Image (cartoon, rainbow, N blue to C red; front, side, top):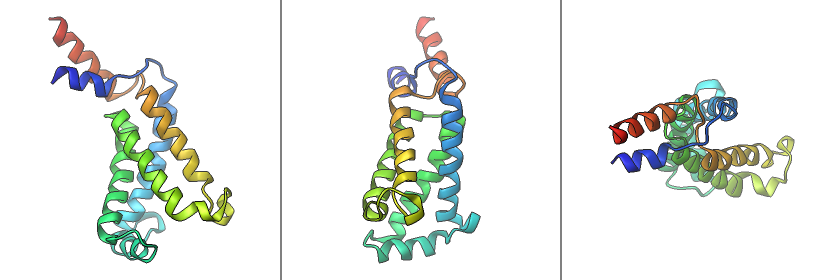
Length: 152
């Protein structure tokens, strides 16, 4: 179990990922809150489910729940730096689906509902998969604790 925790919480030391994690986490949480709770001008779970059904991402309620939960809880995990590598992988997959199913046909630019914003979040997520949470994170605390237990 220690080896598994160590593997998924490992990260490259440094504070460079902290602003990236926190900034992306806030954005992901806000978008998830729109989908799940209707906050920040969102349509909530039922509205998002109906929209997802209408674009062929069905069953809509399941897909809205999955996307909203990945974004909301994934954003929260990024902010606190918990399980950043697997969380970022889930968020990257979520962005690939969003880009491919909604934004790609509109071109690059956000003004045309294009994929530039999704692409930016995808790149950030992929970077966090490779780099990990960094020094100022729950992952770092967990990794340090499991190493201390292993050394004792």
